[in-house]
Amino acid sequence: MNPEKIPSEKTEKKDSRTLKGMRDIFGDEYYAYQGFYEKATEIAIYYGFQPIETPVLEEESLFISGVGEGTDIVDKEIYAFKTKGGDRVALRPEGTVSIMRAYFENGFQSQPQPVMLYFYGPLFRHDKPQRGRYREFRQFDLEIIGTSKSIADAMIIKLSLLILEEAGLKNLKLELNSIGDKECRTEYRKELVSYYKKHLKDVCGDCRERLKTNPLRLLDCKNPECQPIKNEAPNAISFLCTPCKAHFKELLEYLEMMEITYEINHNLVRGLDYYSRTVFEISNRDDGPEASALAGGGRYDYLARRLGSKRDTPAVGGAIGVDRVLLSTGATTPHSRLLKKPKVFFIQLSFDAKLKSMQVIEILRKAKVPLAQSISKDSLATQLAIAERLKVPYTIILGQREALENTVIVRNMNNRSQEVMPIKELGEYLKNLK
Ligand code: AMP
Image (tube, rainbow, N blue to C red; front, top):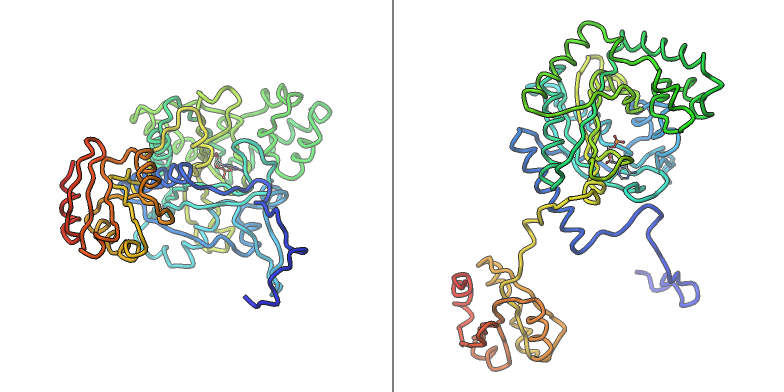
C-alpha cells in the first residue's frame, strides 16, 4: 500500500459492518453450508447433472429481458448500477436466467439434449431483511434444458424433495400448479383480468397495480382483504389446452408412481414472467402455517426466446434456498467431509521446535491424520489444557531436545503413557493407532 494512503487515526473508520441483509458465515455454520452443498452436489451428480458456475455480475439487460419488467425482482429488488466504465450491470438476483445465457453462449445447444446442470452460490435481492430473508442469500439450483418431456419436471421435483429430506426435513409439503402455455394462458389471463375488474373496489392498491402490470401476480397477494376475491378467482388448470393438460396429467402420474404426495394450489403462479406449465413450491409443515417456501421452480419454455434465441428451447428447473433450509425445523445437515475431528494435538515447545513444525504437519497430512494445534502458544501446560478441552486421544510433543534428535513424544491422553518416536515414522504410527 502507498504509505501516503494509510488512513490517519482520525479519519480511520472504526466500525465497518456488513451491509444490511448480508452477513459473514464461519465456524460450524460455514461447515453446515459446506455439508449441504456436498450432499446436494452428490445427489445431483448421481442423477446425471453437471456443474456450472456463472458470474455474480451480469449485464442488467439480461435480467430485464429474462425475468421481466413488472416483477418484484426487476422493479424493486435488483442491485443494478453503472460501472466506472459506464456499463449497466446487475448482481444476479436469481440463477436460471444466467444459466440459460450460459447454455447458448457456450454452445450447450449442440450437445445431446437435454443438458442437465446444477449450480450453487450467492444471489442478491434488495428485499426487506427478516429471518430467512436476506439481501445476499444462497441457492442450490437444478436445471434441465432442452426437453419439454414431463419426466424432466418430475425429476426436478423429486430431486428437490430428496435434497431437502437429506438435509433432515421430514414433513415436506409440495404444492403444484400448471399455468399453461402461450395459448391457454392468454385465455386464462383475460378471464382473470375481467374477473378482477368486476371486484376492483374490494382489492388492495397493490392488486389494482398488478392488474395493469402482471395480472397473474394477483394470485400472489397475501393481503387479508383480498383473500375472498382471490379464493373465488378463476383457476388456471380449468383453462389448460389439451397438450398442457396431458403434460400436467403425466407429471402427476410420475409423482404418484414415486409416492410423492402433492397439493394442487390454484393460487401458485410464482410471479416471474418466464414460467409456463408446471410451477411448484416446497415448504416444511413443521415450520408452522405461515412457513415460507424452502424451494420453488417450474418450467420455463419461453425463456430462451426472451433472451434472443431463434429456437424454442423448453426447460424446467428448481431452486432450493439454502439459508432457509438450514434454519428450517429439524434441519440436520451432514457435516462437511472436509471437516475432520482431530485425532492429534500438536504441541510445539521452543523456537527450534516451531522451525520443524510444518515438516511434522505435512507428514501427518500425507498420512491423513487430522490434527489441531495452537501455533502461538509456548507453554506445555497451556497447550495440554487445550488438547484436554478438545478431547483429542493423542498429543505429540516437539520440544527443543526432540527437535535436535528428529523425534517427537507421542502421548496417549487417556492413560497418559508416552513414547518417543522418530519423526519419519510418525505418519505410519499415528495412522494405525485407534
Ligand atoms: P425464488 O427464486 O424466489 O423462487 O426462490 C427460491 C427459493 O430461494 C425460495 O423458496 C427461498 O427458499 C429462497 N429465497 C428466495 N429469496 C430469498 C431471500 N431473500 N433470502 C433467503 N432465501 C431466499
